[in-house]
Image (cartoon, rainbow, N blue to C red; front, side):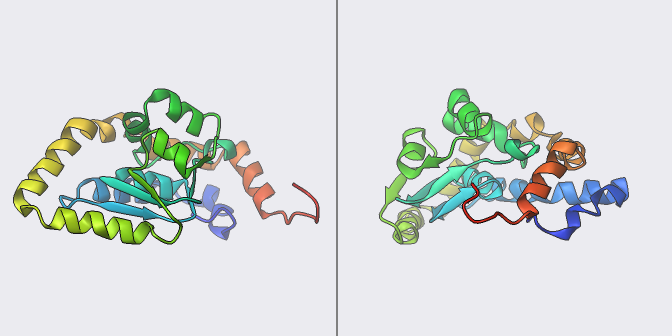
Length: 198
């Protein structure tokens, strides 16, 4: 989904069904992650933006390096935050932090993301994978069937309605992908910056 890719230029000429299929990839990926019975642990180093943020939110646990950053730039370029992530973020963070992240376009450092409940642990840079593996080892020492059942019960209780609430994500993307705002944002991204230009 690189905004500099040429695929966006030809999007308006694609048949509606082809555009719908393209818009379905992200939500399908998110549903696959949601549907895993195994306990999932995200190890985050560096920027965790847009789709990366959405997929991290699908995991059971999230660990990040201290210099990791978190943002959802979609709205700023004329897109909706999709992939069933809005209801998930609201339940993880609460409505007001989600508004700040999505509507105000705030970029959070790792301690802020931890304070809002997005992260379980903040560790030194380069140590996120080791911490995630440690969590995975703790999980692996527990009875597999019971862990999977409880994981599914938590998922169903906390996020069972996420797909229903965000079922129109793909259709909204179809509208936004052909909007003037998105075209202008893509043009700005593709235009090389001059030295000293913000």
